[in-house]
Length: 289
Image (cartoon, rainbow, N blue to C red; front, side):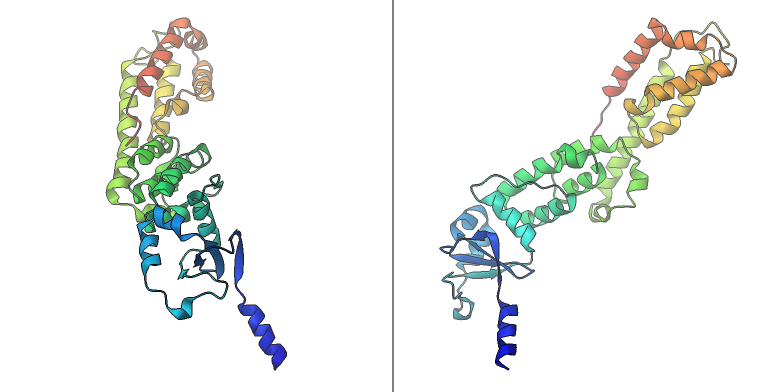
């Protein structure tokens, strides 16, 4: 019986955070996964009005720690989230956040505890290339969830590179933003695509002396506008429609269709200058919500 009791005592022994284990600490944070973090209340009080209120509550005798820590607070966050938050708060280097799911939990906790300084750092991380280049739609949704308009604008620009209607079904964050925020992202795609088509219809290469299209323009340009229209519905960017592979494919289509002059028309200095002008016009279009 004694051995069994000893075994139960060992199972109940708390796990102490290796990062936050100062014996002279005056506050004990207990994570949802039963890890104790021994911290200095003054740091948390200065950073968060929520923690200030927590530590000012009466301290029941049953909650005193035998290690000498004078106050204990049970929190809903797990050890990883709390340790990262504390690293942002303490006078040490900010931690590396390499996963968007982790950043999402940190943003939720920082918002919950009104940690404005931490939130400022997390916003910068949110729109870092590691996240906004790889998962711009999730970044946009997270920015909208917490009212970070500047970050939402940055993410919306990167969303122009993806098919938002397909990817919208993949992420739960999209169910947590308003219909207005989703609608303005869709509207950005649609209005930008329409504006680009208007530019393409108003500008084009010089007349081709070979087998031209019925409209009088080069055959390769007619084919290009047809393909560009489909591409623009998905990704209304110059990098999408003016990519060399697409242009070369259209020129080859025209050449194989009987226009021997289309390759020369495309490569001419006049056509290249017009394409550069078209790119400048497209790049000047609004590209954020």
